[in-house]
Length: 198
Image (cartoon, rainbow, N blue to C red; front, side, top):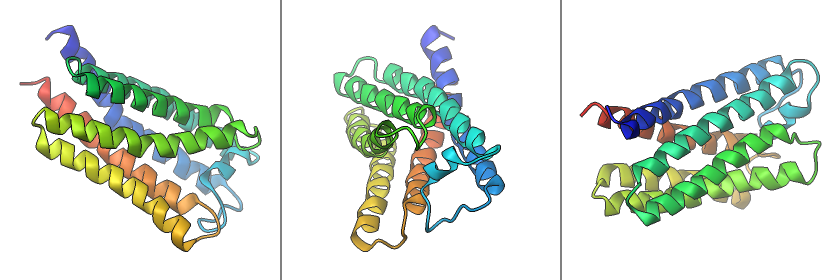
């Protein structure tokens, strides 16, 4: 196995395990929170609560961001001969750094927390639309279409939220958008693993 395949396998593993780690720690943070409400809070409110809630949430995002950074570097390697894919993989790397920064700069560090949170949720669909295009140019049609679907879903939930205001705060659209990202990461991570066995 060459060094490229080794790195694709490592980064693919990160794509698979990151959602598990992220949602496990976020769920624990919610469980230990005394007053979290899905309709009245943002997920980031967990990052400034007393007790174990804030460390679970913040360290969960930091760890997830670092693992996503490794996964994103694998996406960069995946497109090692395609400029479009590499440029957009770089945008995805910025997205991973924004996720890490959300944990590093909790909600009470203003305006940094707001800026990195917006960057995270905006950069994801942008990077996915371009990565989807890169997959199509590589004739990887199914992966490209799935990437487009993930990006469209992540963007649509925010459009619906801001159009209807179905909740007083953003925990629900944040979670749905993050689930879309997680599904894409897990599927692509599995594909990266599978391709190294060929």
